[in-house]
Length: 114
View 1 (spheres, rainbow, N blue to C red):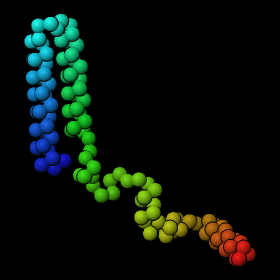
View 2 (view 1 turned 90 degrees about the horizontal axis):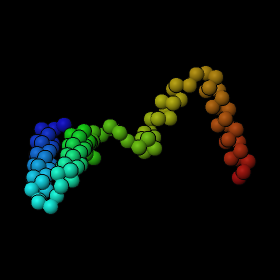
View 3 (view 1 turned 180 degrees about the horizontal axis):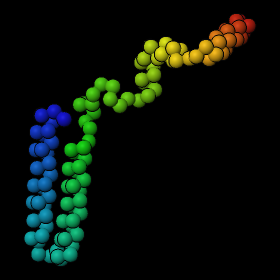
View 4 (view 1 turned 135 degrees about the vertical axis):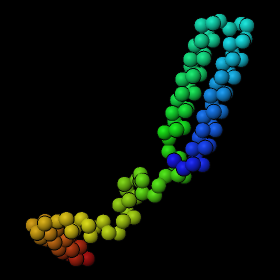
């Protein structure tokens, strides 16, 4: 995580927790709220703040994603012109013969269709 992103993440984290604290204090000072209701509200609000903090610190922002980190595999296959060459290099002799005969058969079928 870059220093600038860390700085702003820390600022937003503080805003989340200050807002949670202020809302909790305001809610608990209302006279027509029961203690149990206030406690339940504060617990739920704390859970939301914890979830937001975890998401903020562990989440990945799309604009900061490293090139090639996580991509759609379909797009990766289309964008790699050397993919077929690498696959052919991995074939053994028998597989090469089988591939050549398959390609020749398909070529013959294509010529027959014309």
